[in-house]
Image (cartoon, rainbow, N blue to C red; front, side, top):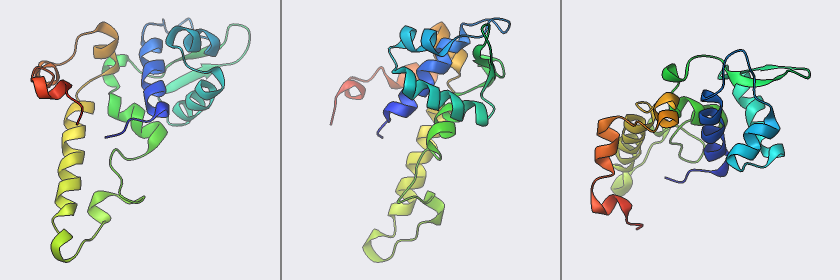
Length: 152
């Protein structure tokens, strides 16, 4: 799986916002500086996240962004889908919409299995888990194997 800069920045920004109080919205510049994200890129990402209800915003000198719901109720899959769309897409289609014939017929099942495994991780890790540095045991267990750290 390729995680785009946009998805990475979105997750990092949301994790950064998780540490903010509900009564103290964070300025875009502050979040960008804290996470090393280009401000113009982050502004666009936060606009998308606001339109999907993941963050709220307030204008004015005391304005900024904060999470629209508790970090414990927000998983990484929701953040990534908000800025990128479905977790697995094949030529712009969902795996269940793609049809293969002949020797490639089993590919649809491969893509659906890939999506299921991505969901298993991304839907079970909340923003609060990442912000606290406390990932679910089953996710940590996946990183325990030596081959998990090897690029192929």
